[in-house]
Length: 89
Length: 231
Image 1 (cartoon, rainbow over the protein chains, first blue to last red):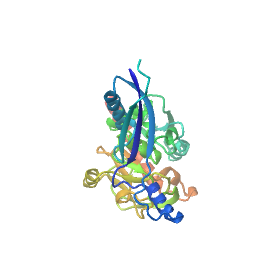
Image 2 (cartoon, rainbow over the protein chains, first blue to last red):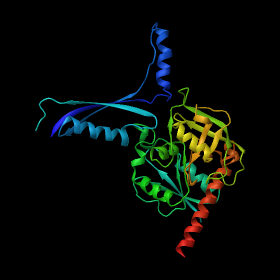
Image 3 (cartoon, rainbow over the protein chains, first blue to last red):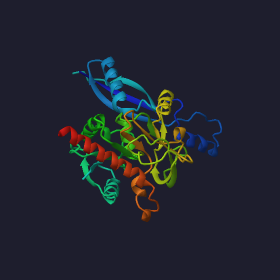
Image 4 (cartoon, chains in turn yellow, red):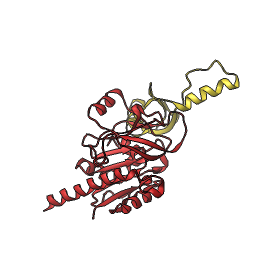
């Protein structure tokens, strides 16, 4: 087994209100950043997983997203898998 | 006597209010600890408000894994009356017992207010003693009460008359002014307003009594039908 670092980025689905993003988008111009748009606030979850290879790690983390980490009714997610160096057993 | 089970997760904070309101209306209520995989033979289940498991990750997301929720799902599938109030509504959506989800209020404010809601259907365990069109004044108290679902789900809720309660004046951005919905069997209802906090004039409104009495009636009917099966 090899250790992989997984980073899960969870964002709102298109069409789902992102009131935190909207609030930040209204606040930034007050500081002079009038050139900002499309601010989105999401969640980032990091974990380490033991798996035979990166593909297997990804499959398992995607399953975790569907079952717990994200709510598919309102959230989308992206998974990034990176092998941790020097971790092969 | 009809007995209502009130689910208690770590972080639940409305279970005693619900218990007291149920007792005030002449039924008995017992607390159901979340780690027990049983509803202890009660006639109806309330998943009350609060912050189950601290609302970590998402509201209701961790609560649905509590052992008691499997028992609640079995109870609901057998037609048992279940109502989720506020955080309890969020738990029921995360558990898949009701469709959709509750997102943050549109204006990103925690809302603590008394609002008017309209009864849209009397065909549910929470509204069977009401009249369609009744307007009730009930407190709300939430940050994530903004109901959302995809278009096909909304179309189905509308077509089946499963939107049980609507806000008269939408306080939180909720889709189609939805304050409460029910499942296909009409025995599982989720709503954001707190009827237990409007269960006596002393509390400022007794409009919640119509909802609670409907629910207690459904509980009594469930008790009677199970008794008939047992005989």
